[in-house]
Length: 338
Figure 1: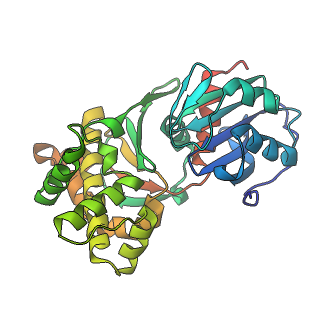
Figure 2: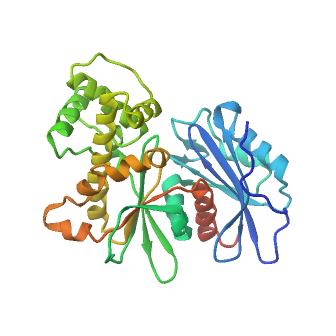
């Protein structure tokens, strides 16, 4: 049920090291690792990936992981998840089961288990990303300084801003995915009108996410007078990359251009002139398509501020352990004495 561990070392921490249990939990996969903190860069000593639907609870996944990796020295941990901790529960409609933090904590024997928003965790982790983890999408020869935007489409649209300071990492969490969707060209306007049939508020992630790609595809079939067809986002992506479905190709092109415009708006909104890190499960799968798309043109097409956007680099991160590293880094920054 689990992928093979990506990295394995001995289970005993070195002097001065803290070892945290860290997890990145989504609706489909739970990624878990033991993260050692003590040097300049967090080190994942074990890492495994589990399909959530194969287990009756999050606690059962943690128990499976810890049974194979040893945990006598682990007292605390953090879960990165697209949702919120409300009292004792994690609020996330995409998870296959209810999560009680107290029950999960008792099940795995931790003194402390905290929850952090997934993109807050990813924003923390980006300070440890190396050049080999990043593909340039929009390059610049004269980058500016300032906050860094971390954004990505997955089940929804996540976004956070990392603000550099001389003493610590400050992360601004956002709900950019729930902000109203804006349209900037004729086809986007037609698609937005189609979406508005279902309600007066269309969130950005209704188009800019994995399910959003399927929504764009559905709208385009209606606009092009093609027969309605229900198709999963990964099937749309596959058909577009293979060139076997013209509307799938158009849907992915619209998606990439709309993503570029949206990311450019977020840079201006949050003053994120230090650069953009793109993350999220769908983007590494369409990397070459994204590079050749209208993403960069739409990202920079901001009228009088085009010159500013031309100096903001955009890179795509492809790092499977990013959420795990970020959860541990966030915990260490916010709970230094535990």
